[in-house]
Image (cartoon, rainbow, N blue to C red; front, side):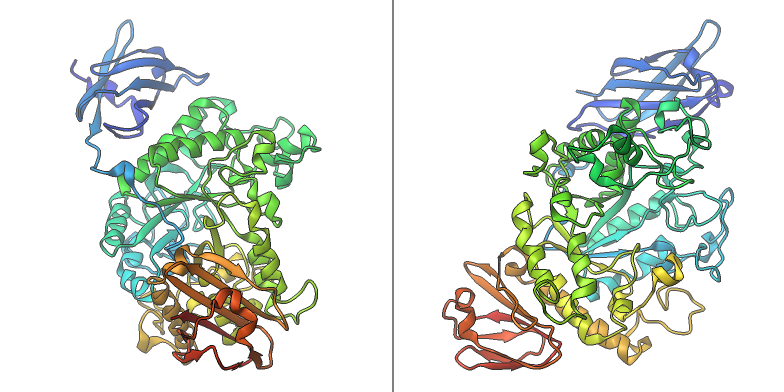
Length: 605
């Protein structure tokens, strides 16, 4: 059948734009969008047509087919009415070899989180683009500043030299809100990189450049909400694609943000729905993942990006605000397609038992027969401790005992090694602000984050001492431009000669630990053994049969004597070691005086 070009233009969107052969799930849902296309009969020139779903909006058809046994190449989707017919081509690509065995990020990695708009501007030509509402305005803290994918690529040498092994960028997909679009969490097109960041090809180029350096790429993915300017929100397939509140304004009612209602056995249905179905913000309609057509669309979109770009992981925004059963099905589908992959969910809660509920195979989740299938959760309770304990003297509940108590609850987790550990991110006051740019405290914090169990994550700029106070100055203050990312910058902290003396102290310490961590199997995989802190000094070990590391954090302002005999359960009669921070050889037959606010990482020989 020859396509009539006039009629062919009736189809405005086909998503996914193409697919692959040899997938674990051979069913493929193809969304076709165009004026009144629901009135046509649909057929396929190849493949097995399973069903065609139509919605209350005549501009949509959802075609479900089975690709099992199909070869790569082109086939046609055929549309026919009483007096018209046309067809559109669709492509199945050959899947890359070993694509399903893609290894995700894990505790051997260190993740670097950046905001692309604020990191580096590598291509000034795309600062403002046709069709995109918000224009660049670097003078406005809440505006777009012009950072892009090219800027990231140009500074991969910096990241590799620093020692990070994985990159997590906040969303790069199109966000066409007229204001505050730089953060990217109000997505307007799930199959398109925002042109102010670059193109889909540029994103794949970033992934390829990272892989050449044996580094990984993690996509920040948003399932809970889309942007109000999303093309599908502008012309909904059905009203139940979003949580539309009849008593709200244009369907909007803000979430109560009470995530505990999702597992609280005493919670009312009203409160639970107010959390799960409420909107995150006015510009972010809350998506109804329980709608099977939408859920399939979201599953395929995530898989499409993993396959297209060769992603190594996903970070899922506001994971615990989704329909919990639907997001579990979404997660399970992706992990079945990529069994060695990893997904980390943002579960911003302040109690381990509540965070644990959302991790795969949780003992707590099984109480009500719930399994999220989510491999990794974020250690927000450790962050809560980090921003307090380093300025406290030790009491029964304060000081380094906060860290000890946090890890003492690891028995709750199904897999403590799959926990994301961090001191800062793009939503919270910067760690160097909490501690007034005290380099000694920063070193204690980095020692902890980079040596405890789990997967460490750093926030861009912390490694050069950047500051920012969200409570006093808003999000723009914690998301400042990295100095040197713009050609007009008077200082370039990407280069050694461009750093101040203090910036160099921060970076040199971070780099030393990161580069060392790459070779330490004990830190990456070892058993965790810790001692109750005494006088604000916390001691723990990371242990394998063939390798052992001892970590000492003296959070006391005064020097303290270390009596090695107190730690024989970890030392096991070892005679000596080397502190990788100072470079000093340590002999365990002599007590050691450790300066105040100082850490040690001792490789035991």
